Structure formats: C-alpha cells, structure tokens
Picture (cartoon, rainbow, N blue to C red):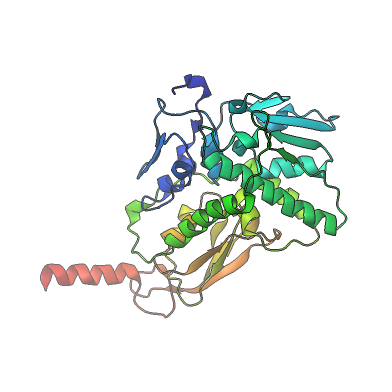
Length: 358
C-alpha cells in the first residue's frame, strides 16, 4: 500500500556501496524489504514510492546508513529519568508508550545502551510477526535482536556489569507465541555471511567503476563501539557483529598491488593510504569499519578478507600492507611496487609506442 511521501525514508545515495563501486553485489536493503520496493543498480538503489510500506527495515539492514527514516529515533523519546519503556509494533494493534512501524526497525546498539542504563524495555507484538505484512524479514530481524540481547546480557552478567535485559513479549490476538528464535536468526545470518563470501572474487577493476564520495561513520557505529567497549572481554560473535554493523579487515600477504581501490571505495575511511619517502602503506582503523565488505569486492588482487567480528578500537591504525616507493629515473615519477622496475607510466608509454609504430 502506498504511503504519504513525508514518511518515506530519505536516501543518502553517496553512502551506498553500490554507488561507490559499480560492480558491488550488495543487496542487503532489497533482501530485507518486505514489499520489494527497492531495486539495486549501478547507480546505487532505486526506491519505488508506490510500494514502500515505511517499515524501516531497509535502514536497519544497511551498515552504511543509506536510508534515513522520516521520524524521530527511539533515543529521542526516552526521558533521562525513565526506568521503563514499552515499544509496540504498529501492525499488531497493541498498545505501548512508543509505536514503531516494525520492531525489526529497532537498533541493537540503542537497545543495549538502554539495558546498560537499567531501563526496562518491553518490545510488544513479536507474536504478530508470522502473519505481519513485514514477514518474514521483520520477524527474523526481531528474533535476531532477541538472541543478540540475550548473548550480550549473558556476557554482562558474567562480568558483573549492569544490565536490564529487554523483554520481547510475544502476545498476539490474546495468545502466546513461542518463536523458533535461533532457527530464524540462523537463516538471516547465513544469508548475510554468504553474501560477504560471494563478494570475495577476483576481478580487474577499471577506473570508472569507482566513484569518489565523502567518508561517513554512522552514529550507531560509534554507539556500538561505546556499548561493546564497556565489556572487559567479549567472545567473537557473528550475530552481534552483523546486527551492530561492525567488522574487521585482515590482509593476505604478498597479494597487494598498491592499486588503492579498497581505500577509495571504503565509505567510512576505515581504510586509508599513507605514503612516506620510501614506503607506501594501507592502514586500517577498526573503530570505523562498518563490515560492509565493499573493500573485499573492489580488491582485484584478493588481498583482503572480511570477518564479522568485533574487536576494541585502538588509537593507532593497523598496517595491512606495505610496499616500497621507487623514483623512476626515466620520468621522475614515484611509483609503488615489489621490485624496482620501470614505472607504470613509462611502461604504458612503451606499450603505446609499440602498438602505434610496431
């Protein structure tokens, strides 16, 4: 059903990994859109306003915050002195202090922050997920949130940290509903992990495939870092990393060619280039990584790997690859390589000369 234009999400297309890298296979938003209102393309993604239901699930599945919902975030509705808050999904018809289009639209980092503040949160209407128009994506997202909150709560309990576990109430039409939470989340998580594996392919990246755009770190990514940073120790968890939009990029030794494609497509600036007098470095800032995987897609040399796990951010960047810088004696340009040889510019000139004159 069509909705009023003012309730449509605002699309910040330059944050989209498909906009930054034309060959990206990312389809998280479209896969998580129940009415099928989103179509990924080489320009990013196109929204069909006549099909959008305003559920907001596109925003929660997109790690780069392409979609900005046209409503106040839940954080703005929580009073500082509040000790409890009930949130209800609008389609269920139940009552609550805050009504949201879909419980799956809620942010794990925000819910965890409220739990750490000992604010008792009740999410009402999860039992409606099976028959909701947002099924199955909305229900799977809710169950994933519930399991992740349980896992965070267990870690907090083991370390003696404050935690008011959010309650996911499953009442619907006067009956109780026990969801198969782990099975539902497993399907959702497996799709996301498989998607990142599908991205790990070798290709030659032409220059026109990459668009320049400003770096951007979503507020929820910084909030996620603050939430997880309060834990003294935390086991590697794929489910939490996927829901929080965090990740870690590692290097495969001896593969980097210094093309810099990965740094140019990175939406958050987690990957950056450092150039000294005699060396070139690809540096990684884990506190800015969104786990989107576009760097892996854009690396034609298969020199990077993405892991859906969280690690505490460090002040200094980590060196992933380091190559030498050489000064070409023929043209006077600096170039990057494993060995001192003819620079790429001179090599191209020689190839062009031979092609023209034989």
